[in-house]
Amino acid sequence: MSELETFRSSVEVFIKAHDWTPTRFGREAAGDPLFVFQLRKGREPRSATRERVLSFIAASKGEGAAA
Image (tube, rainbow, N blue to C red):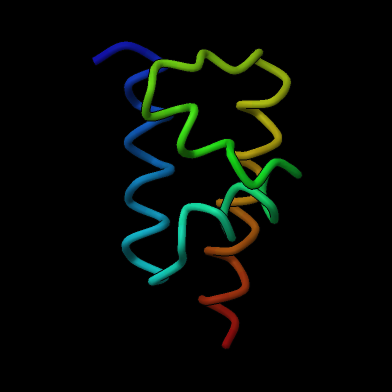
């Protein structure tokens, strides 16, 4: 699995696990409500954007573990 495929999978797993809409995830994680929809259509975010989104996912996991 490529880095981009792994990234896309991480986003989809987060959305499903937290029962979020794609719009909410895009807005909160990337500042773009269309982010997930464009990702699903083949968007290839820059590495800085991927890192920011993955940091958001990791921070959210940390908050869930602390609760």
